[in-house]
Length: 71
Image 1 (spheres, one colour):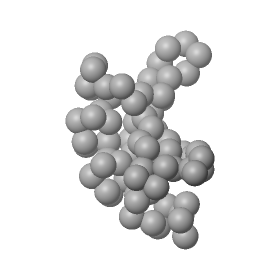
Image 2 (tube, rainbow, N blue to C red; image 1 turned 180 degrees about the vertical axis):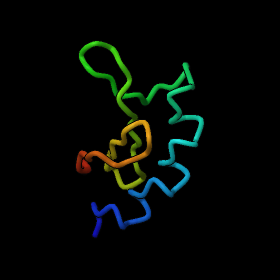
Image 3 (spheres, rainbow, N blue to C red; image 1 turned 30 degrees about the horizontal axis):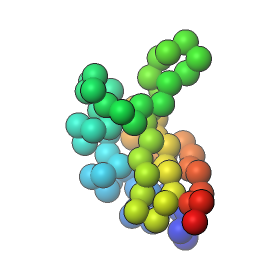
Image 4 (cartoon, helix red, strand yellow; image 1 turned 30 degrees about the vertical axis):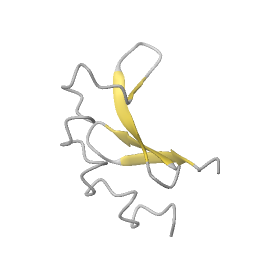
């Protein structure tokens, strides 16, 4: 359950993870959490959770993956 999309910590419905959060928005040119392809196109964003897990989302807020905590 810890890494499940059904865990609220991982859900795009959690405002911290939402694409509507200005920090995650592709329209925020100052954003520091963008994920880019090899051509420099923004493909999504990453959010580090308090548990240490890093979740990856596409620009629409769909979770595409995660990196486990290094703790």
